[in-house]
Amino acid sequence: MKRELIADICVALIMLLFSYTAINKLLDYHRFAFQMKQSPFSLMKITAPFLGWILPMVEGLLVLTLFFARYRLTGLYGAVILLLVFEIYITGMLLSGLDLPCSCGGIISKLSWRQHLIFNALFIVIGLIPLVILEKQKLDVPSGKYK
Image (cartoon, rainbow, N blue to C red):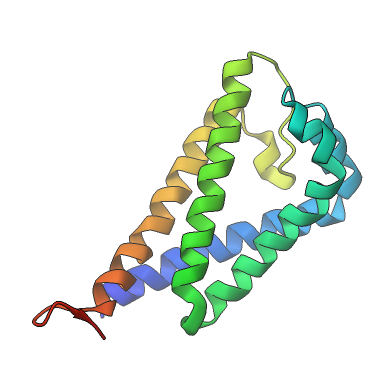
């Protein structure tokens, strides 16, 4: 019971994060796409207009999958993978040495790149906690078979 509550809280936090960032990106699409175009990565410059729509849509889709218990595990895997991709991007921005603004939107864009790296790492852990709990529940311990 306690594990399920912890998992639910973690899932709710990820849903809140992705809802918030998706809405901010869509509401301020032009700024989001413009800031992505300033990225030191060539692929980002080319795909910024496309990613400006796709990223918030993916975040919204992940929120929907997390909302329904049947798809929650898939949504958690997707959320953690997306957070890992963001973490790689943030690391690249830090290593580039450029002082470019974050294109995340809202209050999160006020974080420095180092703070953003820590914030993202925290949410990766928050995403892994319910993954471990749900995977453990899926496994029937005595027989070692999936339920």
